[in-house]
Length: 209
Ligand code: ADP
Ligand code: C5P
Ligand code: MG
Image (spheres, rainbow, N blue to C red):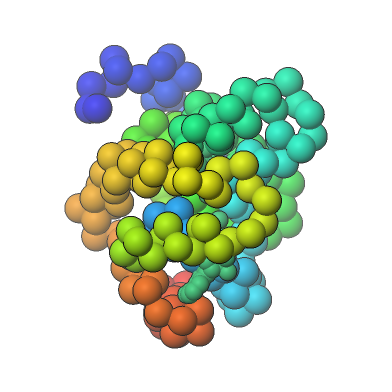
């Protein structure tokens, strides 16, 4: 999708973005297939590098749990492994950023598609410092998700193939986009948690200190 006319009206670029109250904020996007270890590594990044972790999927789950008017709709998207309309997710991220004292954010599981990316650009108006990308073979992703055991509505054999399809068809192009801008930092995620974090650590030491 390239023509701006393909986007819903809320994505129309603003001439002057009145929402740019986070000029000083540092944002790192964390991407990778479902089960690649994004949440696990983000916890460690928080401990070692003082970032605030915002999981897009976690914020959406909190909306479901709060019984908000969008909750049931979001849960249906999640059960089918579909990407929730970007305006909802970006508003949740923006709110969380505005409520935080911290100015350093790792945003995990976002942007999941081109619409997510464009919405963040147009609503929040911040470019990521870099994109941390966890690369992991598909069969490992499936095994990890089936072992996760956190009672998620989408960790099952019905939804996993749909999530993988969305990842390959919609998220990889976003990673390609950032790759073409020289912003992707790739880590081999098919190793132990500590080995993966060694790779993550060297990237953060180099790029955020
Ligand atoms: P994501 O947030 O990318 O979906 P998680 O961090 O929730 O992934 O990890 C998915 C599952 O895999 C969890 O049960 C987690 O404990 C496990 N896991 C995470 N990283 C590794 C790793 N490097 N090796 C083995 N298991 C892992
Ligand atoms: O990242 P996580 O695995 O927690 O995401 C779970 C689900 O939340 C996704 O499969 C999708 O339905 C929804 N989600 C979304 N948009 C995002 C992140 C997550 O719609 N940017
Ligand atoms: Mg996660």
